[in-house]
Image (cartoon, rainbow, N blue to C red; front, side, top):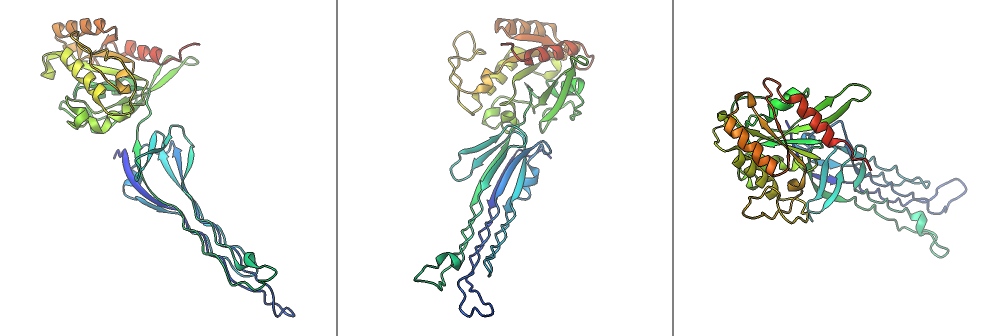
Length: 358
């Protein structure tokens, strides 16, 4: 099961109490104070790891508590510190404070660590309160309470390429042809219910190139408002470097105008709320006027791909190609069933993802 959101409550360990004690030794009937300090409470640490690719382990175990410090003891013995706990999250997880809604940290790389709840300090024993005029203190400190916090976790997949388009546009079939991913494929809408990742390789050693492709559930009009499944997964393509927009040009889709399909999906990408950016106009706007957008999904580089050309309607293919050319976007046509155009598309993706020389 793919879980990309979770809420957790964490409690760091309390500090141990300081001890009140006095030396009691032979020939020392009135020994001084000897109460030890309490141990420090354990921290709650969050660490990004490649071992996980979902937040399901938090969905059913939302509360996490570190060990408290041990109390101080006589003979100036300090209590042991409490054990800290480490919570592992997938790379790409964003941590939000539930109280303020602020982003606390974005785990973009593996092995990043962050203390999300600090353990309480141990209390001081009565040995610390002795003075020249107060030689038998009975004062001692209680341990400080450990921090208690509530967080919201949000996972955004890390992929180089994101596949977008209407349901049944051929996204799952394409990723199954260009990678080892085996998503569910069927002839009905919303077959894909969760993102799928596939590693694509092109070339041969020593010039082998590879990149990660994410297959997203199909978008429909109104996805950014919650229609269909798109709103649950649009954020997963925020981190991608390149979008591949698949448009079905066969008559099997039941939609008469591929250009309108192309425009609808792009408007959904532009309307999805997220981190704002400054932008003058939407390059996908109609000729009669631009559409203002403020989201980086509309800024991402895009390759447009006409799918199912083995059963294509020639007029649809021609119309879409002409529209994309006017938008000055790269255009490819493929058939994932016959393999036509697949290798050319893979090399085109690898070329677009190569670092730009300085």
